[in-house]
Image 1 (tube, helix red, strand yellow):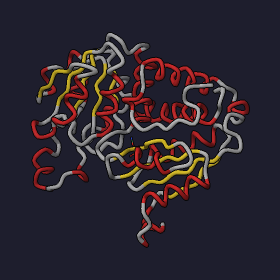
Image 2: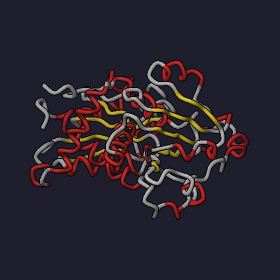
Image 3: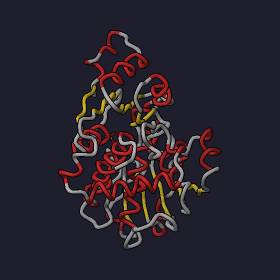
Image 4: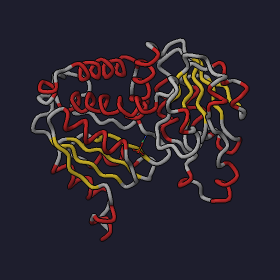
Length: 309
Ligand code: CP
């Protein structure tokens, strides 16, 4: 039986290197398969999604991924049109959705929401973003992108810049990178450093350096992972205005980077990467979004097939 069969995906902390590599191999297989063979993998299966927060890529890539492996999707992406408005609890909504589907994808504002959902769901739950805590399938897609674009993960110097306090993709990426031999440098305004309550958990897995000035180290990175300042998570707008626009990766900064460095971003982007960077050979964030469809198709195929595919 494959190790992912009927398993929840709640935290990237639950993944060891061999589990990640299994998903990467399955993703390579998905990418190589003839579309008609691919459509056999989850034929007749249904993905149910519940998005309590906005999403473009995660929801649509799950939807596209499920269609590519022959399944179908149903769900709620605008909770204002659901019975949540009448006061229905997360537990009941999840329980009902798990009756209508074979696997459930949940995005919710609260840390711990996916772990809670997994306890009440009759079907496996995939965390598509839980508060500021984690976004594990984004990390799988990010690691896969690094592996495809740099041909390896071990031995790389990786800079992560932006909102490291509220950006959940950063936490999942750091936990995932803990399985590899990488040199990690974190760059953020003082007020947006990694949350102190997570530093111990991250340092169990990897060491990292921290600074505030991106120009000091930009020439050293093989991978620059840029993140958006998460305006919606600031309790006080004044605090957001103090850090808004702290980092803008433009052509001037690209010139200082290694020639073969790659720039990633989980997206959406606001102003932290200028649009003129998109046409450079270093920009890989749209490829990263595309890999998201394939990694999610692989994850669905593994969760829904006892013997893999
Ligand atoms: N990267 C990501 O989670 O994007 P969405 O918020 O659009 O799903």
